[in-house]
Amino acid sequence: MRKDKKQVIGDDVSDEQIKLFLAVEPADATPPSLHKLVKAYRGLRDHDFERFIGFFVEAGFDLDAKDADGNDFVALIKDQRQAEPYIQAVNAARG
View 1: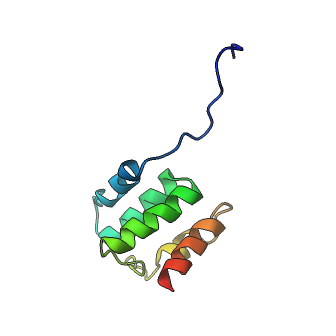
View 2: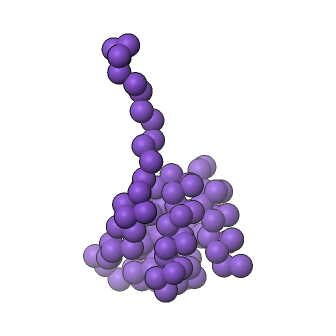
């Protein structure tokens, strides 16, 4: 990298960019709330996901939505290495 170029790792994400995850819709029978959570989990860093959860709850989506097998968001990601901060964000929002 050239010395006059600043390395940028993880640009700030605006609220508007985070809210875009509220608009994604499933192409299958997955409940829309669960689909939005999974997409945001895959696309956002943990601190941005925490902000997303605030918008998600404010918009009236369901943190406890389950797939056809009865798995909620936490059950779907709990065995993944980086999942803990995301699970904590969801559990904190549940109260």
